[in-house]
Length: 288
Image 1: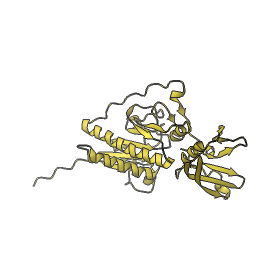
Image 2 (image 1 turned 90 degrees about the horizontal axis):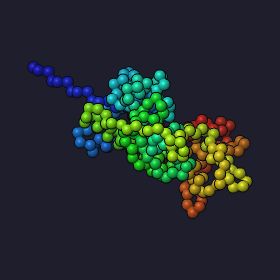
Image 3 (image 1 turned 180 degrees about the horizontal axis):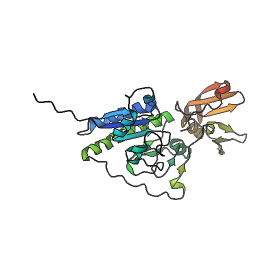
């Protein structure tokens, strides 16, 4: 009796994401796009070592073996440096197997807290860039770009990013399967001096605290400007995600956290939580 030939191993792709809710959105979008692409490969899509869900034991043993075997590792939302000679992903980064997603039209807006920095600059629309990650942050060659809305809360925006990134990632996996190689990636080109190619800086948790002055100005992270309802609305919504340090007001003994902002007829309505606990002063959440 002849033995049945072994079924070929499914191509393995990993998702490295700092927030479990965004991982789920990314995976759902990846699978949904796969159903619409002809001859889409039957993939093994798993959460990567270092992701929150992985830390809860959702992957089998041998995490480094998974990283070594993965065809690509996708980073739809990741707040730590990848590479630098340490960590799970150094070898994969060196081999060009790490794929990042950045919500700016790279090379414009390289760096930290891109969503918050864009909103502070008055942007309502941006671009989501899918690129090959390198040792230099957000500087690798680009696979694809697509338009991205900055409407809604930070959670709305990050969910939208994960949704679009999942579809982009499925397209990249499909292209890799069709041609047995990745599609050509285009160099970003050099940064140019001037406002058109700002490099963003990651915001600190203490920059989430609003400071008002008697002459009608307020500080958005240390920089005072004329107060307005639209600017206050943007400031609250851009920090409104469960893992971020929310916009807040602070007085001795009390901190007021603001969320769920609405802007209508020149007024801002928001949910306010008055926190009188001693440990309430800047509990160390992220700022984007």
